[in-house]
Image (cartoon, rainbow, N blue to C red; front, side, top):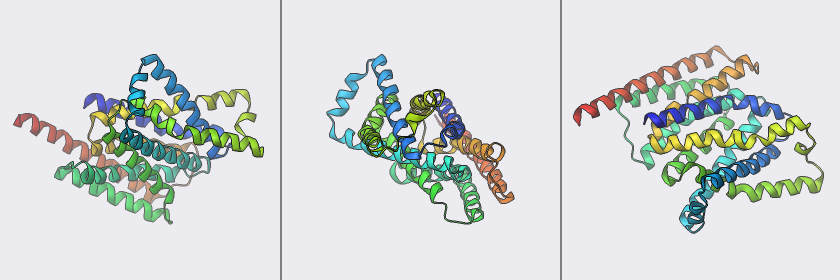
Length: 293
């Protein structure tokens, strides 16, 4: 659990600061950024798996139809999440992306209860209720249907559930997921070249090198997340996720200068209250379980 918590914290801090990275490519369309993200993630993970000498695991996955189908689903889910996130950040919707990842832990709890038969304690249900009220307040104050937020929450929540159920090694699983969407990314490169609309390849050398690093930037937090998902309950993992959107929210206010209402700040305070309540309930549950044993 402790090892899982450390991995989760590292992953969510990395995701929290990602908007700073994607803002470097404001002049590149989101779809083209996504295609590079997929290709260079595949290259980076291929090198990592080769160094680890895990190609035998890849052959085992290729021989299992059920595993291939599961990894195809998780690969498509995370690719959709990447596309929405990149588009939102580069079109000045960082506040809405933050809201999406505030919604995600609530969805994680719902998915954990329905599909994994996890049973939150009363204190944890109280925290969930507080966080739910906060998100509702934020959504109402936002003034329109938050499709970006809901799409991000749904794709990443289902991705987390898929990772939990698949239970594959982090590096092998991520290589498999990127391999699933690699043909689409390469096909998109060919299409852009055919119609003369490539943007990334005309970037200054320094900026293009930064884009090449998108493979590392993408893979590292996903590796930490996969390790966390294997060691923690899905509902607890979801609440640790509040680290990421909180960092995004602070970036949107102090770096990107997006407008934030007082109601949003109230919702922010309620969500952190919920996080404290959930953590306290979880610690209490752990102590009671230890005494009982």
